[in-house]
Image (cartoon, rainbow, N blue to C red; front, top):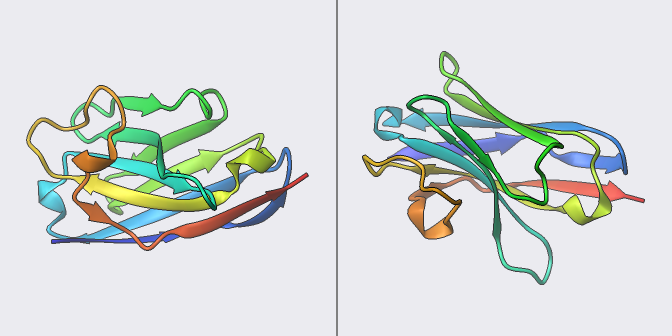
Length: 127
């Protein structure tokens, strides 16, 4: 089992920045891929970015490419999402998730690939 706790959400104005954190605990040795997802009110959850544990290969959704950066501190078992140039359409609940399959991250961010999920942290961007 892997437990995930997100933090760092909040309210900012458009153009501002936030850094989300996801602290992982438990059997983290099984983790092969970590990702960030978000869900806005009335919309389906969408993948934002993922980080392959082996090699540190990253992937970003087109909507955040160039503005968001995913990273991981191995010593702290913590995943980060640096969000810059925030837009009102980035407003959502942000979730951290872990994949444990041996193959690691898929080519794209697929929600069904992830086994463990955090409770989420709210990000609100005002215009």
